[in-house]
Image (tube, rainbow, N blue to C red):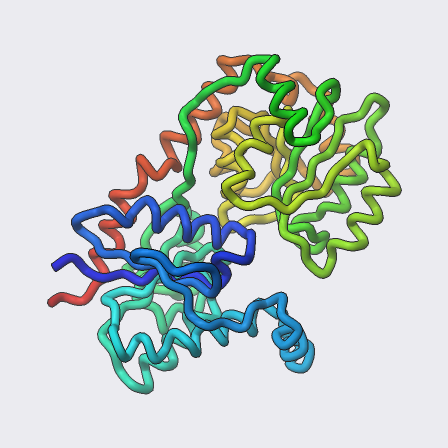
Length: 372
């Protein structure tokens, strides 16, 4: 019989981050295979065939926030621990062969419980958090690129318990927008039809995603400067960023939105260029999504971002003032020709689409399952 895999995601269906988007896409890519039985176990939302919710103290609840403050932790850690507590009895009642997850704290709880009470199920970490060591409780760690595995090996982690497998991303077929279609899309989305639109999709914070730097870079540009569209999940750092954008760009010069993952694609299609200003990422799936929609892309000069973008995106030292403004003023950031869009899409699709990667994911999960 094909091995049973639980894809465990505490933040689905209420958090809007890359981890949750990946979990949903991975489930849909693998759910109908004959060589694998996969079930999605989430922290909220309705249950459905092969998909169920378990009781979880959600990160945005007053109780989770109070507990987090008392223990000097982020509310999402409380969410992950409460989800783990709900998952444990289900592991006894109907144990899977493999638990596949992205959240580090969840894995720590499951590993400690397995050591204490036993169990044959395997733990596989999808290492989106770029954790470099401490893999002793895990059976397999999925690294997104060779450099991540090499770094972990240099720190003493065994190479045989790691596999290099890029993040899978849903990428639609290439379909360029005509000018009339683009104007209609922008009008429907409430975006300016006569102005260049620069988009960034990232958590709305300054500590990692450096949204404040991006706002200032757009504000530095001479009139008529681009319209800035920020798409992301609100966090504790978001209110001052809203105030900064209102002050520096004006209400007619920007918008800040939180949209469902399925709606991000049309926001990208409506834009002219994409910028990600974080100084590091474990992968940066939004870079793939932006390329997949044919957009010119700029990210920080970092080995991960350079590897993901390949030859079809640009990198620069985004610690420097005017780096984004200068790129936006250059020719490559304006190249929205159909051949350029097609090249970007094909480069992303060939390396990162689920059509390409789903068989490799299934093989990874089958290979680690215990023998029956």
